[in-house]
Image: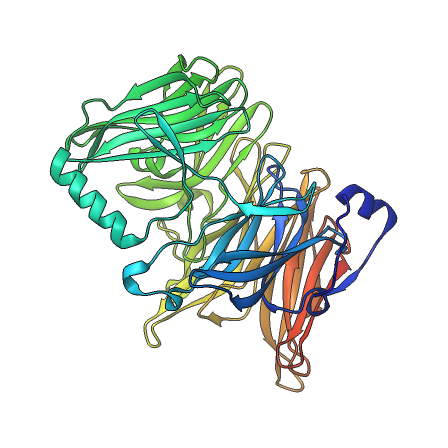
Length: 507
């Protein structure tokens, strides 16, 4: 193992600058994963690279992490014992600036079926380069308890069955630490087909109850009350509250005071269908869940699908003003709003040859405009696999009105979409997004992968194309880089070649 001394991110970036890094030389274990680390504002923090050394006990396996800064300088590394069921980990940065390693793949072949358990997350403190199991709490009717050992699935099922038989329901709770200080807990009784007696509870840093907000106290199969969290800050917690009585639904913006738990406001949400409001807090496509919200100092913005008669007919935007608590809703429908920009589109978002426009990314720019990136997608029933073609970028203005659309023509791909990732640039005023395309050379007839780098600056697109096909059995994978750069990883497992490099973007 190559020793890496712990350095502060700021010092590394001040005195060192590296454009390339050899991942294979950073540790002697088997490389099992790497990903970018982002802070709570979605700013790139650095990278974490993971290595495995194999089994060390009946329930443990040895790993090593290496933390890199945005310039690919190694700043910390350490070996640690993980659960044997962990295949690898994926890192993220929490509000305390701790790096959390969450299990990203699970290997249940290492334990008996009767002993299955989920591997636990690990927590890295970069200030002193220490790692420990992330602390999780079990909250049960007023009592906090640290979870030291995960229960296996067989034990959990048995306990739930016995509790359901004795009480007629299962008591459910979850508790988590919050950046505003202290903890929030949610508890309710689960009867299987419905839940009731819900409580949202705020605790201080010493786990003393500060306030309790009760709702859905008499919930049953026909009458329910649900809260969907939109955002929280030092002053307030914002929810969409849904009350359902048989098939009738009522939606309101509910704002609770963070310090007291009292209702600050409760305002009806109108202008959108029930299905649209019901689903706007979550937005997924055929290939991924989308980050469909953006919180600014003065507002919360969400974009989701617009539904009419249970069918998706376009997109909807919901804005909550954090000062006045006013709710503004707008919608874009495929017909008529996009018919003059996208050829052969119908009212359900289908275009030529039965391809459907599937969302791939959303961009919330500082001027209030929104960009919606779509990909043409369908299932090829001859092969039983999905296939995709062109990307479509929809421009809107600050009032969520369509200003235009740009189509990025690309070759047909099977099994997976070609869209990769994006990042904001120029202080959130502009954006750059990346996709790949397998193109055939007109002269040689060979097919090669190309990376398409698309910048949208001041409303104008610019595109750069970079070859990324395998060369001499080396695989090339793009990753998001620091602002103005892209990270390219080249590796060959047989030759133990695994290098990353930063390339400057032209915009």
